[in-house]
View 1 (cartoon, one colour):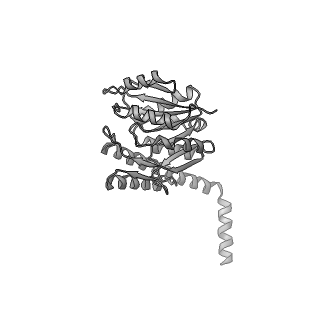
View 2 (cartoon, helix red, strand yellow):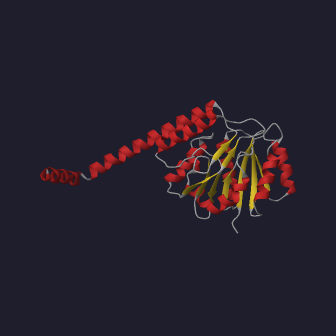
View 3 (cartoon, one colour):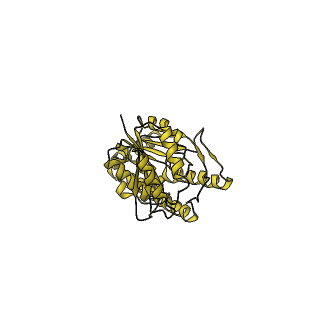
Length: 264
């Protein structure tokens, strides 16, 4: 039986970590384990996670001494999961915004797909308890990402995902450009560029009830800057490819024009 690892990064999530771990274990069978990646939380989140790990062998804890962003925590979790032989690796928030009750279906989809995205913006997906401007920002950011990168994914910024082991091994994780929330776009785009089979499935995203959101204006600016840069790089590659193709086939293009003129 395949074994799956749900990676939950934490920083000051003392009120949330026990409930979300309990829901995750209840929603899944014994083949699904949890890895809490704690960035030295001053509120004692890591200590609570350690206590959970003593209560069941399905919970593991990775303590980090530095806080270098969401992406850094996930990369550390991926490395730990791959080293320990897990077949599917899940990204999931600690604050309850991602419902672990979706996990059985998402893990099943990963049997026939490389990357499963829990999507707020496909048909059937939705958000709860968000102000209108937060939804507008997310929808607008995803629209901009689709246009800039030329992708069809509706929710490239979402953080509820299932990767297969082979998918992570094919993505160049060492070259990830962002450690913040743009990390999600970066991973999704790399998966598509690598030719992986990516599927979106609708989820309900619920705004956290406890603790403080890590979203900020700096995060939004970082995301826009990087997506714009990646989009420009993509266009330049396309232009370079067209120019090279033009120089490789001059006689074919000349003959085509000649035939066109004669036909006229």
